[in-house]
Image (cartoon, rainbow, N blue to C red):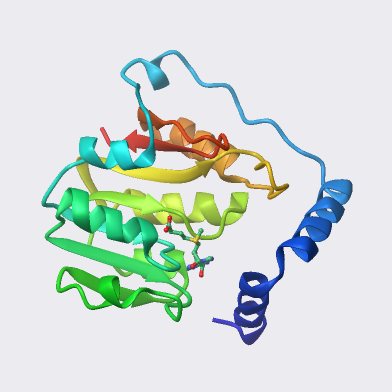
Length: 209
Ligand SMILES: C[S@@+](CC[C@H](N)C(=O)[O-])C[C@H]1O[C@@H](n2cnc3c(N)ncnc32)[C@H](O)[C@@H]1O
C-alpha cells in the first residue's frame, strides 16, 4: 500500500464531523452526480425485501464460509458471528487498529490485511457462501471489489453490498449504486435481497447463478 494512501485513510478516519461536512459540501459543488443504468425486469424478478441488514443475515447461508470486505471496528462482523455462526469469517481491511478484541480473538475469524481487491484476488475460487463488500465506496473501488469477489463465491452464493446509494443524509457521496448495477448487468447477477435502512443506505444481495 502506498504511504500516501495509508496517510489519507488515517486522516479521513479521524476528521471531526464539522470539518467532514464542509469538505463534503465542497466535493458536491465540484462533482456532478450521475444516475445508474436502469434495472431490467429479469434482474429483480426473484428479489425479496427485508427490514434491515441484521434481518438479511438470517436469510443468508448459515454455518458457511464468509468474507467481510471492510470491517473497521467489527460491528457488523460481530453480528455475522452471532447470527450466521460461520465456519470461517475472513475479514479484509487496510487498518485493523480499531477492531474489537471480541472479534479479533474469535477462533472463526481470520484477518487479511491489505487492499480489498488484492486480498480478494488471493482467495481460492468458488469457496465462499457469501461475501460482504463495505470498503472504499467510490465507483471504481466498489466495481473492482465486486469483480475480484465474483469468482470467489460458490455457484448459488451471494455478493452483498452495503450503502447501495448515491449520497447519504450527511452529504457522503457513494459510487456503490452505479457500481453494483453496472456489475450486475455486465455479469448477469440477479438481485436476491434488498434490505431497508432508515438513512436510505440500503444493503443489496446479488445471487450468483
Ligand atoms: C464503512 S467501514 C466498514 C464497516 C463495517 N463493514 C461494519 O458495517 O461494521 C469501511 C472500512 O473499509 C476499510 N477500507 C477502505 N478502503 C479500503 C480498501 N481499499 N481496502 C481495504 N479496506 C479498505 C476502512 O479501513 C474501513 O475500516
